[in-house]
Amino acid sequence: MADRNGQAKILWTAAGGAAVIGLAGIAFAGYAMARVARAVVVPVRKRPQNQRILAIDPGANTVTLADTPDASVAGRYGLWFDDDSGYARIGGVVQRGNGTVTRTLSEVVFGELHPTSRARLSGWYYLSPDELGFDVESVEIETSLGQAPAWHFPAGERNADQERWVIQVHGWGAARQEGLRAVPVFHASGYSSLLISYRNDNDAPPSEDKRYGLGGTEWLDVEAAIRFAKDRGAKSIVLMGWSMGGAVVLQTVTRSPSVDLISGLVLESPVIDWIDTLEYQARLLKLPPVITLGALRIIGSEWGSPITGQGAAIDFASMDFVARAAELSLPMLVLHSDDDGWVPSTSSRALAIARPDIVTFVPFAGALHTKLWNYDEERWRRSIAEWLTAHANDTSRARERSA
Image (cartoon, rainbow, N blue to C red):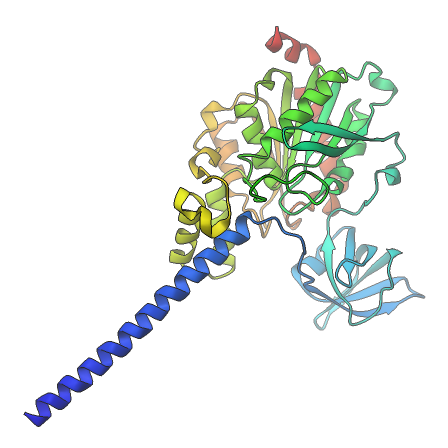
């Protein structure tokens, strides 16, 4: 009897311990799901400084970084350092080995660059519209939330009537500067460029919930930009979306009452399907599938609003444009690197296969996320210029649709 009681006590203790561990595991999983869900929809205000500056050689105009995929990629980039209090421009790789990468140091724009600084690479390169050498005006676009600032680059002499416009829509956690790289190629093709801000940007009005809608709400601000362009004489508008901006643009063309003015889309490293993108990011972070699934459920359900602070659930089905490919009708150029590292190119390729009649897909390799211009500017600009000539420059098509 004593032995039996002893065994029972051991089993009870073990069961109790397993229950505690089980409850702790469930609690941790719930916490992790909530953290992941919030990370997706809460606007980012501070980027991680994931690069290390090891040495500076002023005489040789070089900077040496710890070897990482970002630090070693070919091309020219911006280099933010000291918690974004400093900014430099760097060029190509001079030497690589022993865990380091030495690159050309083109200029330090502001701040004091020194070894031991933490840093991050940026594809922006240009910070100010004045750097491009074109006429530009700062304007305010009237949105449903208030005035949103934008930069307007009028077209050059080749298009004095200002009929052709491009509206640039930046990505998740970025800003208008992201689109400055694209202004020259559109300017050369006779386009006015409008680089917009949208809700929850640092310099734009916040939404009531202060959360990203992943395109499901931001498209309203693109619609306001289309109205602005129309009032300025636009007859044909190309929408260009970067990363999440691609998702915003796709929502716009399937929901906007002004779609007849839109002549085509240019998508750079775009989010075509949010679930595909978020599952890919979760795999990179080695998150258990249950955490990813739980986070998606939280974001996509009304009951998740108290956890994330969202004003409304996000309908992920409406954001899968591979599944919705049949609903698309406008010509589009999709530029994506197969080693993007943030947004997988799988959905871009799948959309091109589903709609070869309207999608021109230009793959890159080695360019990472939204850095295609930086990696191979000539090919990037040529791809856009040729596509504009073939698919978007004829304003009569937009007139016919709106007639």
